Image (cartoon, rainbow, N blue to C red; front, side, top):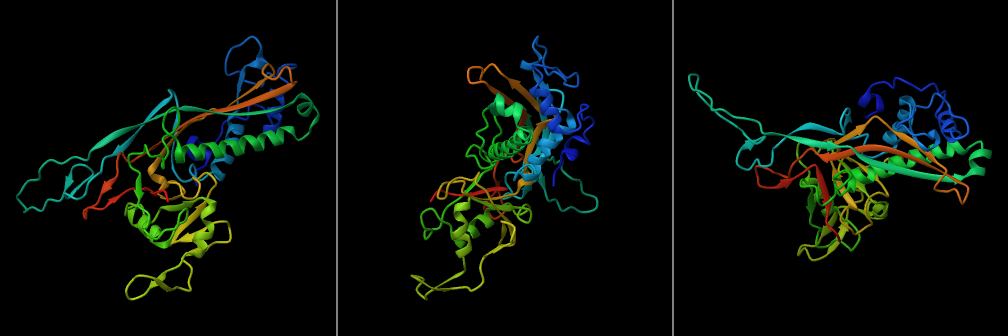
Length: 357
């Protein structure tokens, strides 16, 4: 599982604060009493209206919670974006095996002892990750902020949950304009959409759909891929079984006693030997994107170290409210430039979804 330390190394500074709650409290009262431990992210005359960089240790605390409870960040490639807002990581073009060529230029050559080899090259390209800003906004009354001993804890939990939810949503379905290009977005050139089976009920899924999705997963990725479904498909998965047709293949006359989906007692399970995850971030049942089979490590995420927390009184002055805004900068792209045609002509990908039903 990817951790903050894996991406950036161990956090170097707590900013002098003993806890994240202590840091939040210092930001909250900065308009009345500025704490010298706060590092201003921008130069303004009024410190309470500036943004403050979250110290590394507490940035790690917020983001680590998002990483651990997320679907995508704990499974994908994660690259730190440092210096500029752009990071370029290498990719390999490998779109077509049907002609006997691998990695865009490597072919098998059988030769005698004194024969020579023709020049061959692996075709590479650069994947550009550009840091896009994600903002999370929370507000509360002045009375709540001043009188509630649990205000900072509630705010912390809200920011953590928001970071986890919206980052996952972007890595799965982001349109790529000002945000990551999601694995399951139609704009992903590597996305494979599997046709539904003719017998699939509207808004549901059957074994034949699952088998077709399994076959469409890139062979080199299949043993690392995981299923992800909307919660609405849970009944269909629990009822899924191998069905037996009559001799004319015109009707089902029975089924297996052994379920195809095996629950694990922890909210997920296995299907065809691969892990199953359920998430409300998936599309509604029946829409494209409600069921997917993904090899997450074929998706690259770029993330900057900084989280910035800003407090403002101005927007809620009339209502006597305080606003808090946490921002972070990320990007995400497929490491596959296109789908892959296998030697037998079948088209595969690490990113497989079932068409709308």
